[in-house]
Length: 235
Ligand SMILES: N[C@@H](CCC(=O)N[C@@H](CS)C(=O)NCC(=O)O)C(=O)O
Image (cartoon, rainbow, N blue to C red; front, side, top):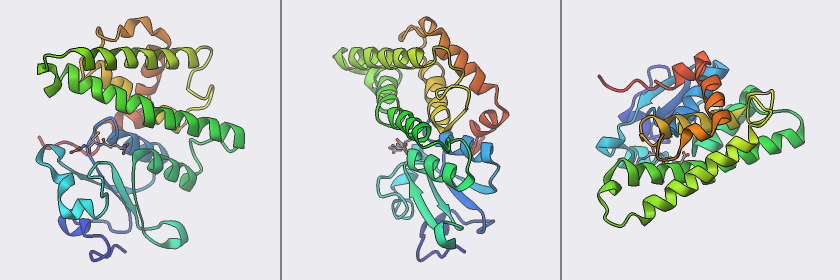
């Protein structure tokens, strides 16, 4: 059970089903990694919408769960040893859920580390670079007179798409025939780059046909479609 003295977040976002995994998120590229994974593995969970536009991640209740003030975060009431496990950082959450469910992370040790390597590639490179490109191309940064940051993040994003394009040669998924948490970590970011960030032409996305086909393949998965809309945004 979830004790509100241990987890102040449950006071502000009460759990209707405290026995289920609690997800605190918003359908952004980082948030949907976890909702897609939860939909893929079919673990019962309860989703709470955290409104980052209203600075809800910077409230004391949220910061007690993630001192870094970012979604997504979870509390699994049935964590290791049957004790509640709070967790933030989407990559760590993906690894945790993969190990808990025994899904989407290969058993073979070499393949397993290779998958983790690509998750780290997403966390350390694709997420930060695409995110900065979004800031300088679509959001507040577009007003900046100095266009060098935009240029840098555009070039870096194109380079990273090139890395994916090469990796996907002869492979349906990042790890080949098997769909893994590496794909789950990346799908929302690539979709966002050419969708919400409106950077399709800027990064010359059409020159990365294997990435485009991989994205289409991913978006065709029903769990991905469901996960992309969780938690539902207020109407
Ligand atoms: N490395 C973190 C990044 C999380 C992150 O940047 N979350 C953004 C939304 S995609 C956020 O919560 N922003 C709120 C803010 O900075 O105020 C992860 O992957 O979990």
